[in-house]
Length: 193
Image (cartoon, rainbow, N blue to C red):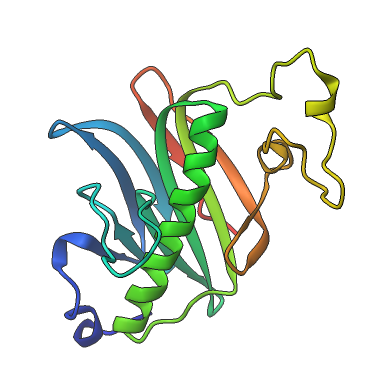
C-alpha cells in the first residue's frame, strides 16, 4: 500500500498499517475508552485516527472530524471507510455526524497528499451508536413533512439515514453502514466492499 519512507512523514500514534488481524476505533472520554468498534482486516489497510478531538487541519474551514478513516485495498482498488462513534444518535447528532464524515474525508485527502497516497473513488461511511432515535420530524404540520420544491430531500434531512446512502464531497450515493453497540459499548464493523 505505502512504503515506510512515505509513512515516516506522519506521527506514529495517528495511524496504523495492517494487513491482517483487526483495527480498533476507540472513542475516549476523560482518558478512558468509552466506546470501541473493531474491524476485521483481511487486506492491506491504513487506519488514520482523530485522537484528541482537535481540528487537525487548521487551514480547513470544516471544524468537524470523524474518529477514523481506514483505507482498504481490495484487488488494487482502494476504498475509504470513514468511522464516527456516537453515544446517542438523534436527528441533530445525525446532521453533525455528516459534517464529521466530511471533515475526516478532507483530513484523509490532505494526509494522502503528504504520503503520496491515493484518494479512493469509492467510500463507505460507518456510524456506531449505543442508542439511536433518528426519526421523521414530529410535527402536526404536514407541510413540514413534504419535499421542498426542486429537491428530492425531505425537510427533516434524514432520507440518507433511511436509505443508507449518503452524499459526502465527491462520493455521491456512498454506502452508509450502521453499527449498533452492545451493553459493553463495543461493536463489530465490516470493511468488505
